[in-house]
Image (cartoon, rainbow, N blue to C red):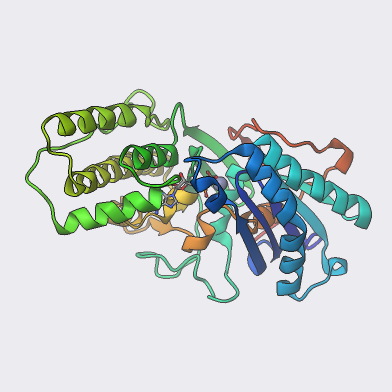
Length: 369
Ligand code: KG4
Ligand code: ZN
């Protein structure tokens, strides 16, 4: 195993979070600090990019110094700096990328640029120092190690992407978002139903309440399986279907808290069914032995449950990160940077808001878990 860049200080600012972490050997979390400006955006009903970037400028240095403090390491112990360069909001990305470049310039340490979406899946390789092996302790996996080939599903606010992972270093993109991502479908539904912004968690709660008080009202949303595109995802039609249902219910004077919960339940079931079917199809096609879930939507308990109950065989195991590592953080950036191990001269690193997630690559072969 190559230990050249063992201790990595990672920075993440792609959306409204400012995060820093120190990760050792790609798997051991020494510290993880996340400051979010979501409360500031709440009154606007969505993230205001300019406001997010200003908050990040204010938070960057306190978050970095807190991360070093919690790790009990000093900047001299750090072997490399990693930063998420995209995809994301340009103003937000600039804060993290320029901070990382400054650190690299001042300290002379190598700088590793990282793709934020791909980094999400490395949350499954982490051992949380406070809860040993918690990233692997998911229902059905018996705490065993990830085996390959694995199929990796990244489900976040802006992306729903499927990858084939032949090793932690060898990745192939199989397909992904063609319009709204799964997280976006949750967020748009949440707004239509009157919940707050970034409302996946609110939908999950409302859907749980519905289960306790189910009605006989016939409501079933479509499942966009796209049979001709088995590994691509399209969730924009769900929003249209929900708008139609909301109008119909209001016209019939049947709009109630219970109906809101019913719609939340149905949208969650629809998204879960599509995610499970497409992932299982990939597992069967590539004879995968592990499924790795990651991204904010993978925090959803019903989605995890559906995966567990639809595992295609006894040899396929499901992995999903502990909840705080599903949503945006810098730990995943530090882990992926270790496996990637490709430093770049800081002069050649830029924020890339539209960075592609469609990779087919073999990273360094000499990093192991
Ligand atoms: O990965 P993430 O933190 O940020 C991006 O990179 O986009 O994902 C955020 C997304 C949001 O759309 C949010 O509504 C969704 O993850 N999310 C959830 C849950 N928690 C967060 N979706 C469904 N159920 C949840 N419990
Ligand atoms: Zn993310």
